[in-house]
Length: 437
Length: 110
Image (cartoon, rainbow over all chains, first blue to last red; front, side, top):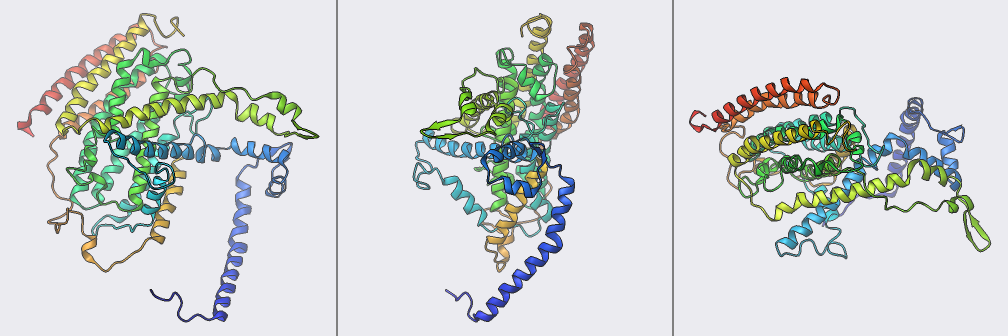
């Protein structure tokens, strides 16, 4: 145990402290404040109660509850909030974290183990946090002849591609980060990035196991992309739109899985393959090729790839829900907020608590429809995630040639059967213009 | 969202790099992983791409699948007679796919 600072002198300590304060003040004045002023010209500031919300007003209003709520409402309507918190990254990461925990406990129960138990007081509920801390404090080891820029960039790009996929999934009516007209094609474009990132990471590692795993990932993702694309064509034929929000809204009476069960099954199987989950986890087959294309990734790089793959899992489950299970549609179960509380305030003896900014917040942003839609979306997504992680405890891994034969011969045939079912329903007049709906 | 993820995840790597130990004393540590053996040969070796016919097929049929989307998203506005040429196109594609699958199943020619 070494002494932290053997030659400690109070005067030099104070001198270094003053030095640091000087440099911080200098940098703040020369760079920080001009940067703030430059940013304030670019960012459009919200107008609240007829007044432009400058930083000074925002800081002074934040102390007054009746004026804080409009500021919060203005923040909830910005794109920053959508990207960072609700339909975007925070929401998806929360569901992904829940998925990891549920998966570990469920696998343990299926295999007659206990699973995470000690971390946290209740059933190892803080295990994920412990794992994250462990991963972030591990050393990142990069193989000697690796292609360093690509090797560093690959995990970040994997998470970013998964996040771009998450951005396309509508959670509640109007609550989607990127409402693209050709949403489904955008989804295919984003899915097409994953094999590229995988093979780049595998090739740049300059090691044999990642190379073999990357080539397997390439085969697998490439073979299952065509059945994936074709199995969703039935939904597009019946809806006549590629926008995911419109597809979800078109299922207000019945979900498409009633009419297109074949397409739903094909899409589910291809989804398992694209997510590299058992029985299709050939790219990271841990009993054959150490960890496949993840072999050389260490520490937080591995953690990022895991985060990205679970974000991808959430996004695929959300896509399944939006396309086949009706998205946010469901019976209204969320009770409406008692409006007399907003009008009259809460009376407790002599005191009346009245919050004036609550009415526009509840009627414009956090509406009853939004809460209900989110509830149904989350319930359905959790159900789909359950069925995605269930095969991991039940099925063995299949061989490469069986995988390719399944993808190319059987699933593509079934996808075309699904297209013909959709065409038949359309031309028999059951669905589409003049039919049900 | 893509940009936000890059901006949010890069600091994770940087923080990890900052707080994790870094010892560069041991050259064996930076060798590629080969289950404890000293690795032999290059990492990026020649590797037999056994199933490459499927990759070639992907190049063709992925484009076909995306073309079908152009038809499928506009089918509600098209007249019913416009479906017949599409069926002809699909028939040609089925023939091509059956031939390609037959060829890619013949392992002697790999």
